[in-house]
Amino acid sequence: MSNILVYTLENKIYINLTNRCTNNCIFCLRNDKNDVCGQELWLDNEDSTAKDVIEQFDKIYAVSPSKEVTFCGYGEPMLKLEVLKEVAEYIKEKYPQTKIRVNTNGHANFIYKRNVVSELKGLVDEFSVSLNAPVKEEYDELSQPKFPEAYEEVKKFIKCCSDEHINVTASVVEGYKGRHLDLETCKNIAENLGAKFRVREWIVNGY
Image 1 (cartoon, rainbow, N blue to C red):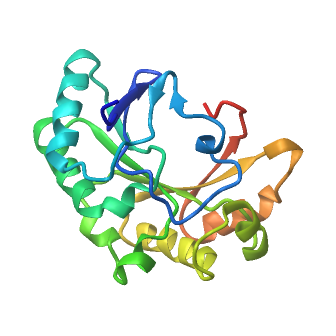
Image 2 (image 1 turned 135 degrees about the horizontal axis):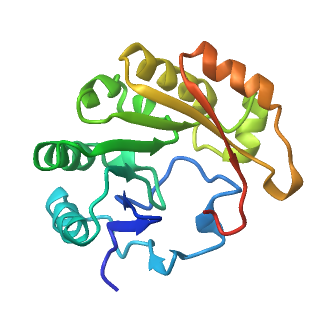
C-alpha cells in the first residue's frame, strides 16, 4: 500500500507526515485502529518528502477543497519540521485563504533545542497542543513521554505560541475508559499560559 500522506475527514483536509512520536498516549487512536474512515494511516516508511505531500494535497484539494488544513496523523508532525514548513509555505502561497493548524504534543522546542514556533509564524495560523493533564504525574501516566521533562516542555511550548501571538488551544482528553480529569485546573493552566482550552471527549473510534 502506498503512503497516505493527505486524507479527509468531515470535509476537512488532514496531513499525515509521520508515524513517529515522542509520546505513547494510552488513549491514542492508533493503539486500537489502523485507519481513519477506511484511510490507512500507518506509513510504509518515513521517507516522504514535501513534494510527495504536495502532490497528494493538490489532488485531494482539487476534488474536495477545504478552508482549513490540519497537520495531524498517526504521529507527531513537528518531528518532520522542515517538511511541514515547506508544505505550509506552499499552501499559503497557492491557497492563501486556507487556514493551517498543527496538532502537536508540544515537544518540538525540546527536540530541536530552539524556539521553532517563531519559524512557523506566518505559516501556521493555530496550534492545538495536547496538555493532557493538570499535573506531571498524571501527564506521564497518560502520555507516556520518552523524556522526563515533557510536561514542563508542553507548557513552555504553549507559552511560546502565545508570546508569538499565534492562536493556541491547549486540549485534554476527558472520559478515557471512565477516567475524569481535573478540568478546572487544566483550564486555569491553559488560560494562564495565554491559550484557549478545549475538552475532547474520548470516543472509542477516535472521531
